[in-house]
Structures are given as structure tokens and as C-alpha cells.
Length: 180
Image (spheres, rainbow, N blue to C red):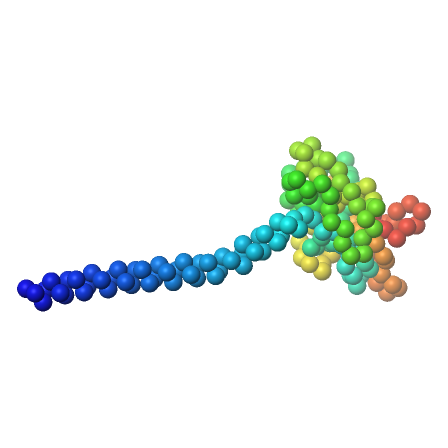
């Protein structure tokens, strides 16, 4: 009988010790895994916003980007609405942000915003609203095209040297270097 009591006491302690050890290990690992996310969230919150800069593209030259290439629209008679915005997301500022961050190669005087009907602030360049193309990834320019909503053009800040080939962009009046 004494052996049975001792056995029960031992078996009760082992699971409690194991549970406590497992819980401690879980919380330690959780802290280690979540710490970088917390630090990243804090640092991204401090620099929250949209950065507009330039990138070189072999076909078009130097183009405006914010993670991906940025485009402007010369509208057709069909307004860009819900379906259009799925294909052509607007470059919107996060709530509470009043202007985009001027990145490398960007003329800050041309960077601005326009307030949309829903109160969102859309980033503009040279007075024209900026959009992304849903099929682009970083380094790609696939959206230089005409569709139901109008003509979409990548924003070119400096044209490619001769032999850049094939892309169509129009330039701003007066022959400036920004393609719209």
C-alpha cells in the first residue's frame, strides 16, 4: 500500500513538471519569435507612409515606383470604379498621413495628393493620380496599355537611351522629362 501511494505521488509530479517545463519553453519561444515582429512593427509605425522613388527600367528608362511601377490614367468615357480599382489599385496614403515620402530621384515639388470621395488621400505626381497595376511585381512594367477605363502610362522621369525599344509613353507639354 505504501508503494502504491509513493507511485501515485511520483506520477502526479512528473506530469506537472512536464507541463510546467513545456509551458515555460512555449512562452520563451513565443517571446523570441514575437520580439522581432514587435520591433519591426514599432519601426514601421515610426516610418509609416508611402515612399515614392525611382527605379531604372531597361525598356522605359527611369520610372516612378512605390514598391512597384506607378501609372497615371488618361480616362475614357467609362469611369474607373470598383472593378477597375481591383486591377488598378490607387496609391493611397495610410489614414492620418498627409503626404508621401519623397524618395531617391523624385522631384518633391511634383509629389502631392488628391482627396477622394471616400475621404482617402491618393498620391499624385505632376497633378496626376497614381496607380499600381495588379499584374506587376517589383521591377516589372506590364501595365502600359489601353483598356475600358482609358490609357494607362507608366510615369517616366527619364527616358531610356536609344534602343530602349517599344514602350509608348507620352511626355508632358513642353517636352519635359516626365512621361504621362
